[in-house]
Length: 361
Image (cartoon, rainbow, N blue to C red):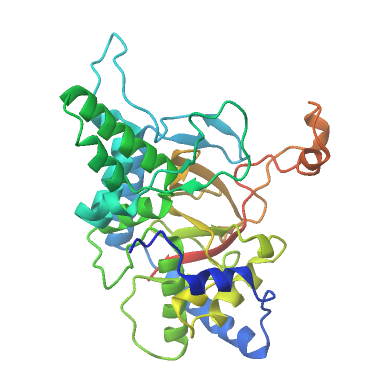
């Protein structure tokens, strides 16, 4: 059974989100203890595994030829995407090493080995390729890459067969979220063991693990995981840490503290009851202390690998909530719908629902 298919219990839990949790007295005491542990760790130099994780992220960004976003949240360099196939340009021969989809395939294979083809899927809609008019309510088709590769293997012409195989991989890589596979790849490449980090195709796996580690530390219990969860605005980031945001519709107006408290409240239940599921994380790759900036690197952003420059505040170099950039409705005068006009001031690609820093212990 593929992990990509949600269990029935998970679907039920997602359909009935609880109201956002708020920290009571016990919750406030818990996070005070957590913050003390995070502060004590933040003043220590980054460890060798942390530096390796950060360098791996930088190396992958450079190898991929990724996108660049400045501190105002503006995309100023659009790099290679996962859908691209390398082509000859008259100066350099084509190379499979420069194809975006091949890089992403590397992440999947490092995560799942020979099972990578069963863990990725290409999406289709029944009859869409032959329909002459738009069709509502078409059945969603979700064959795995393995299904498509098996079909391609039945083609006798070797050139057509190879092209179909590559097309199958590219389609599955484009249609299957891979940002967590990217994080898992750079952490695993640093030599981190599976008992220290849950390598997964879903960020929530190691996010909830980090929260459980913080709970264990507060309770005075031992825990083997590499990361614990730290309040975002009060903790100084270091290279090798992981910054995460969330995209849950019912938490759109919730503060980062409320989101953290919800996750803490769900630790005692099973994975199928976890409701903070739509998440994205990036590695803290570099700190520019004089400029009060940090750079994070993540995958599957604009279908590529991205380096993002983010603001830090004060001499403590804590994460800044001011990531909105310089924009406003008055600067965008293209005629638009009422819904578009409502979001006209949200023009920064760095303006996300960041809610937790996973700190490398």
